Length: 398
Image 1 (cartoon, rainbow, N blue to C red):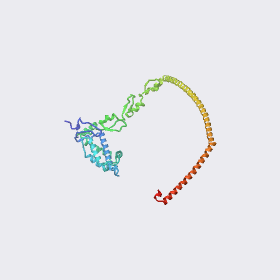
Image 2: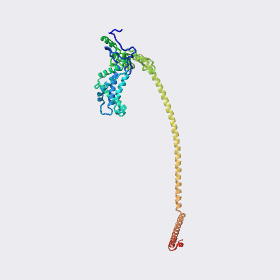
Image 3: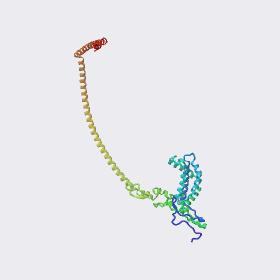
Image 4: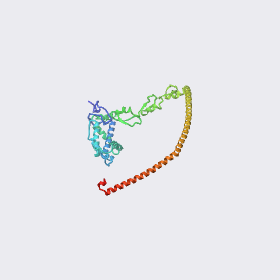
């Protein structure tokens, strides 16, 4: 027995509140009373509104693929069709709404689109995004009208009332009080600078990630800093930031806070000067040692170079001597060769050679006379043979 002016909540304790994303499964059916709360999850409404916009953009691009029609113009003409189609469906969850709208989107493919002919997938996605941005301007489908449709669709596809409130009252004052406490009431972020809206049940979720929320510095410097700026604060300007002394590498091991560094440098200036002097002496000794090592190395290399130069000079002298000997031998051989050449020339001009030449010439003359005689005799034989062939019979020819 509940008083008439008290809340009549049709949701149950087992009903899961909220999921700002499409896909929450619900099963309860709403009971409508006279004064119903009507609040819906802000995140879910926004997602449905965005999905409606994307569906219209995709459908317009599908319908105009391979034609000269502008997709924006097609979207404006197609909007009433999409609104009517969307209101014709209902389902057990918000995923069913996505499937229902996807069916409309698929039905708008032209002949070329169904055959897979046209722009590449990447070009298609780019074109859809261009149309979606144009639709988001609100001229073709104002955001207020789109949100009203999203609210109606949310009720059709949320029978379990998980993302919309159906609490109802007979008393208007009770309804007003409920709306002040409803977990689905819309809220704006209280953090300065943040413009996000969400349902009340998400207040703590948003507060835990809001980049504008002022947080106390974890280093206990007393400052309140925005979450998005905290990393830069603790790494830079925070006075409680741990720092090391600039003279740590010289031996000062003091661990300090940023705010104490100046005082430390002033108080420990003599110590730091001593560390600098000690380090300078150490480096001077190292430098002297390195210089000495370098000088020794240069001396060793110089001695080695002088030894190599001496050896090269000896080899050069030996090579020069050998070259002079070879030149002398070459000169002697050249003279002998010239003498042999002259001797051969003289022999050719000697008397014996001239006699041999005369004998060869006489033999050539005799050979020429013999050749003429032979040719004369051969001619006589041929003439005789010709006469026999002409005057005699077969026996004569034989």
